[in-house]
Length: 261
Image (cartoon, rainbow, N blue to C red):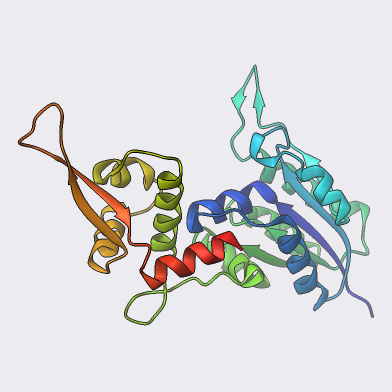
């Protein structure tokens, strides 16, 4: 008996979670085909929908790209003059569509939900009461632990995109936070900034990380970052501490090579 699979992709969740965790954005074609191939192991993928505010500058052209790959884009208005920005607008629309599908498409046996928000637990509960199986795909570092426990199966976006999650100097593996730091500083240096201040890097550039000070200290200790002094025009006795990438470091070269490809 053929198992019919419906896939719901909170594209905004995957996009921003990947960008914030690893410093790069997922390539649409690779993500879609990877998800389709993974779901095909469990049945026939009969529909794929992706949710995002396609008016956002970072998603320009995404609707067409999704349609070319047989994914139905579902535009979600995340900003309105009356309400301001609607938080979690994409996953709300996704939840409503998934629940509606239970009553309009009884032939769907397996629901693939690509999203890491804990709010999806209630959706999973409802689907399970209708004897539907639910597989969750999410960025490992940002997917709710509780959400994983409620799903019938969990797969990471890292596995789908072959993202290496735990590289450290001791084991020859680069951590996601250090990889993010490398990409960020590379971008700043290529933007022709005169220098990258250590305080600016720690407090603002890496502000989304859990412990930016620890990440910077590790990068310095491992030789990934080099520090130097920049004269302070206000007070010569207190020069600014700046940093730059050690572009001869093998980890730096590896991360930048992967980013370029």
